[in-house]
Amino acid sequence: MTICNHCAKRFGAVIKRRMLDTDIQEIYFECPRCATVFSVAKNNKEIRKLDAKMQKVKDTLLKDKENPELMEDMQTMMRKHKSMMDKLNGKEPDNG
Ligand SMILES: [Zn+2]
Image (cartoon, rainbow, N blue to C red; front, side, top):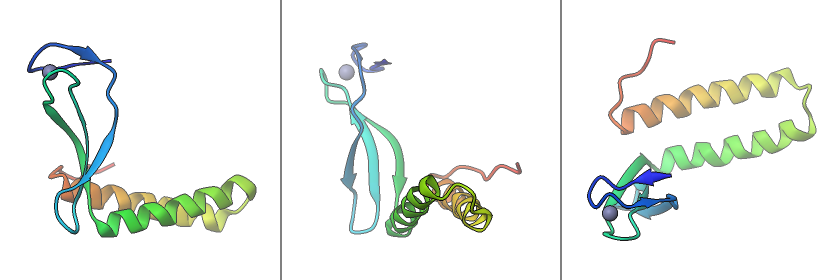
């Protein structure tokens, strides 16, 4: 449940996606009463490409759980994904 900080309506957020330009996509939801837009995150073409790749590896891992090489690939991609998201969304990379 989310509370709109504009009109104080409580609502279940429905996540939507929209293109901000030809590269950047915004993930957001909006208040059903006053239509205030709450931005969740942004991604770009490179991140979406990596997303698709990760999804494929995830599907493979579901069928082939004992595949350390693929597990390692997945972890590398997840790290890359996070650092690209952090960079695009203006977050400091954490040192963990
Ligand atoms: Zn509202």
